[in-house]
Image (tube, rainbow, N blue to C red):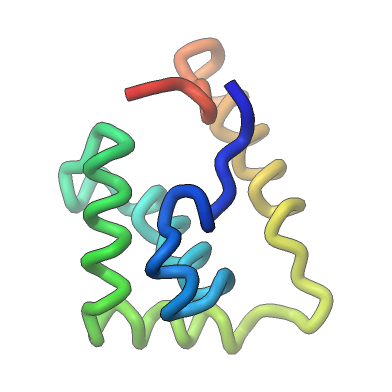
Length: 99
């Protein structure tokens, strides 16, 4: 399975809100999935799109975006996050697995 970009997953949201805001909201959902009770990729997509329109969550996202260093690289963060999750969950963690 190949990698899907944010534009592949959230085409309209990326056009409307931009890569960084959509990406940071996507990470927010993945980091807080247990609070919202999402399990499948479809649920993640729906929740991310919904939270892009939620003012309270977007205030949190705006603060996170403002706090990023000028040389922030989202790929490095994703790689480090995936390594940490793989170390924690072992073979149960598959970042590219299907629903």
